[in-house]
Length: 97
Image 1 (cartoon, one colour):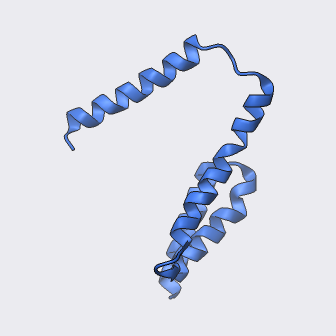
Image 2 (cartoon, rainbow, N blue to C red):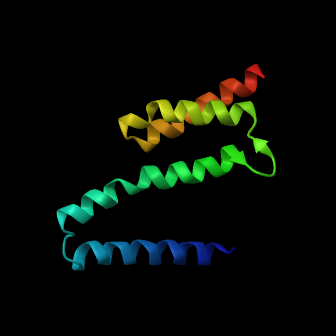
């Protein structure tokens, strides 16, 4: 992938989202509440694909520790904290195993 293509896609993504936020009317509150609850469920589904698969079984210990650490801070609703604690958990488990 070339840098021009990457920058073009980034600009296109940003402009399309900014235009939607600027020109589209606000969502009704019930729909907004439903959409606010979707990201955790989607991320959980994606995480399960990495933790458990029919072909290889359970993931290695560092991956399980990273997922557990991220899950413990998930109630704080901060993606940055989840990433930091997941990385720390993975690093500690990698060093100890």
